[in-house]
Length: 610
Image (tube, rainbow, N blue to C red; front, side, top):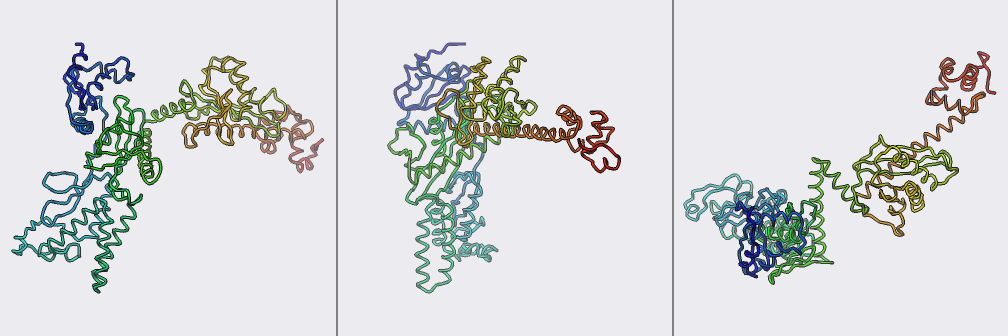
């Protein structure tokens, strides 16, 4: 492979703003970028002291030629970069994941213009407004226009000459009141054009001006006792005011601003755009960008801003963004609001982008469950400051009743899902009375002593249900076994959902909506449920065994044998003498029947309770 001499190429690149293009050995365009200073920016790719990621190193290794275009300003470079990327779609550039053709509202360039929606833009002098990311919103606006302004829907060539010659007749739309009949000169062109101008104002978000004008006309009509006209104007006024109340989300003093927010994932980013006019959001859309070179949020947002402003033909001087953008243009004002109405607008945009991101991720993860697992485990690893993915997690919980029937339960999650076949519980052997710390110490020691003896792989994460005391007891056993450094161990306290690390004075608090915390809570709750179930079985068995011991000739060992064989006292009560003798001798069988069925004992002369 021929070696590329970047030093020679840099000599010909000036210190001016512009766009640079990288080409590979096949003369294929592989990357397009913009720069305030072309030579400095291109040189940074080849500077060994510059920290670049693996993907960028691959890109640099493929460069065999560099071309560039000089422009006047950084903003010009920004716009040129956007148009070239869209045209060529180079392999290593961010890919705009947007293959939809969004609809536009068209005001047709003709006499008595028609207004309708289309997905095709024809350069015939017609005015196009949009595009509309929400088709339902577009139809709502068209419905409002239809209800407020009777316009023609036919495609007749309504020239002055044709109308004067009487070539056309009014149609059913005129009879229904949906059209004023310009085809027969029942509506003047000046009156029709006035309606079109008001519609343009509405579509551009200037509803307030239209309402004020309509209110003045309505008051004049009422003053002139033209109540029929006043009623028609009042109906239009109410329709427009209702539409405005649904559209206005901020103070109407905020006029003509663009709002952008971004949410990133490892391979994708999502950018939301809101177009605000007179306190009304008139356009909104969220797009997805596929990362190619681990681009920063600032780079991605800059690309998206250029794309949106070109797509929507926006000339707003103020742009609201979540962080500072390094773009030097005196004609643009970038605002990062902290408080007030502009902050509310940014928050609204961020809510939209986060919802879109979640929807996209959920949709993808439903089709690829393994992706969700990897993402969740990676997030848990970061949140819990681990150095490996917690694919195998175990959680301990203790249960007892006033120190009696103590049970320590362990539940196991593998790949963030319960592995019920691996659940275990321990009957506590070495602890007397209600000592939760000693019970935890015994359970942890027995669990991992056995795993070490059997050569079983240890979990990556151990969760102890309890505070610092239980955690210290667990660590005592792990240190005794010599595995305290091999696994991550945390304790979770119920009251405030605090996470404790061994030897750490201060707890870790995770966001209540955190997926990591939800998995830990699920583990804790599952361990509690399983422990309570095991404890109740042991307690019930103990209670039943105590009842059997009330029968003459039946001791603790015999009662346990009976329960093990018959499974319940109910079945022992219903058993025949022959069935009982499968476990006990004849005398014991007769004593059991006499205890549970005294009426049988009285009629047959069987011995009663001793």
